[in-house]
Length: 232
Image (cartoon, rainbow, N blue to C red):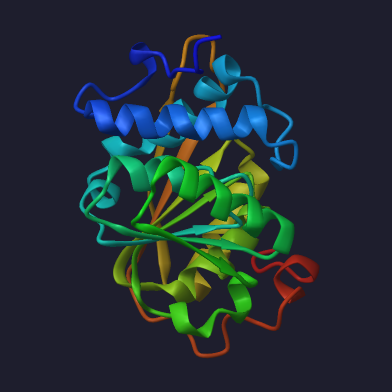
């Protein structure tokens, strides 16, 4: 049986043959590893739902030019692993709070030869080493947006960018996010609709810039952001 392969139609044309092989290796791990923490493991579907969706953010200059990137709640490695493959100049940190998921991420990075990615087993709120160090923070299907903002803001340098993958728009949550952003030194600068693969609908990238210092009281203790989200 031929190894799984990412369709060229769903990938940026400038990716090298080596990068395409790395993405194929990511698909192979998803299919073969029974501990992959995602319900979508079949290569053809995963190539669209996970890889093409992740790489759709590369059109954003703030991401393409970033040197230090953090993927929050990386889970099965998306969007962080494909982004690391596409941007070999960048140092990408995959932050995940569950040990078994971290073990899977390590296996994936090894199998795909993603040398510029590292896995950190911690909660975003507790990761003091990462504070104020990153040009870009990524979050995909992680938490309500005000919670994501509180996780990301302390990890970004002033001038850095948060990219939050979202589905259908919610005016109520967007309003709460605006209020949370104001308290965290963030500002929403773009909300981009995207169609990363044929048939995709209600896919949006919410882009926030860090325009000022995040107050020292943030992040709050682990778990508080979810229990008492800002902007509510």
